[in-house]
Image (cartoon, rainbow, N blue to C red; front, side, top):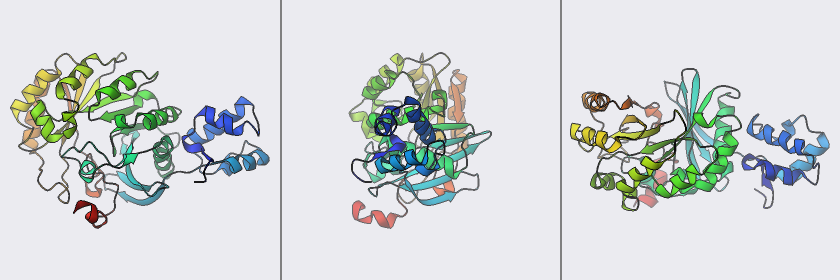
Amino acid sequence: METGVLNLVGASLAEVAAVLAPLDPRPYRARQVYHWVTRRLVGRIEEMTDLSRTLRTGLAERAVLTDPRVVEVRTAADGTTKFLLEMTDGAMVEAVTMPMGDRTTLCLSSQAGCAVGCVFCVTGALGAGRNLTAAEIFGQYRVLVRHGRLVGTPLNVVFMGMGEPLLNCSGVFAALDLLYETVSPKRVTLSTSGIPAGFAKLQALPRRPNLAVSLNATTQEQRLRLMPVAARWPLEDLMRSLRTYPLERGRRITIEYVLLAGENDSLADARRLVRLLRGIPVKVNLIPFNPDPEFLPHLTTPSAAAVDAFGACLAEASLNVTVRWSRGREVLAACGQLRGRMARSELLPRLR
C-alpha cells in the first residue's frame, strides 16, 4: 500500500472524516463512506454510487480499499469453509465460515501465528507471528461475508482463529467497533487463553463482546503442562479475574475445555472443574481434541464414552454444559487446527 494513503477498511469514522475534509467537510459525507465500507462492504471506491464522480475520484487519490487476498478456499461436507488469506506483507492467516441453522458463524484470526504455545493447538506449535491491524481483522470479515453472499443475513462472529486476541488489544478493539456496525456485541465472542491484564482493558470498553476463556486444566501444574502461558499468568490469578469480571444481565462467561485422552478427561478432572467454577456465572463448552497427525501426533481424542461421562459429571453439579464436536475437521478448519500455511514443506526450515 502506498505510504500515507488511508486504507478505508480499518478506518474509524473520524479518520474517514479527516481524509474527506479537503474534498467535502460535511459530516454526513463521512458517514456515507463509512457505511459503504462497514455495512455494505463494497470492494471499490467506484461502487459508492451516492457520491459524485468527482468526490469518488478525489477520495481514490487519498484512500484505498485493501482487503486480505484470498489464496485458497476449502469447503467441508458440512458446509464449513476455510479461507487462507494473505496480507500485503505476505503474512498468512486462516478464517472460517460455519453455517449453523439460520445463522452463519464467522471465525476470525487476531494474529499471524501465536506465541501462547498451547500444546494441543497447531497454530501454537508453529510459533509466534505478528499482530494483525484492525484493517486486516475487519478485512477478514468483509472477505468472508462477500464470498458467502452473507450481507444482511444473521451472523455470529468469534475471535477463535489464529492468535491470542488479548495480546493484540489495539487491533482487536478497533476491529470490534467496525464489526458492531452490523453485528450486535451480544453476537460477538472473544476467546482468550486467559490474560488478566487484557481483562482489565476489555471490561473498560463501553460495548463488550461475549467472553470465552480457554481453561483446559484444573490445576496449575496441569495447565502449565498444556498451556505455557500459565507460567506468566497462573491459574489462581486467572480464576480471581473471572470471579471479579463484570457481566451484563443475562450474560455468562464461556469456559472452553479441550478434552485430551489420558491428560485432562478423567472424572477426577471433572470434579475439580466443578469446584474451580463454583460461584462463577459460566457455561462450559467441552471440545474433544481435534487431531492433527502431522503436527500433534502425540495427542489423541477421548472416547465418546469418556466425553459423555465428563459432561454428565458437570451437568449433575448443575453446570450449564455442551459438547462441541467440531465442524470442518476434514479441511483442517476445526478448533486448534488453523495454521496459516498450505503445506508442511513450507515450514521445514523453521522446524529443523
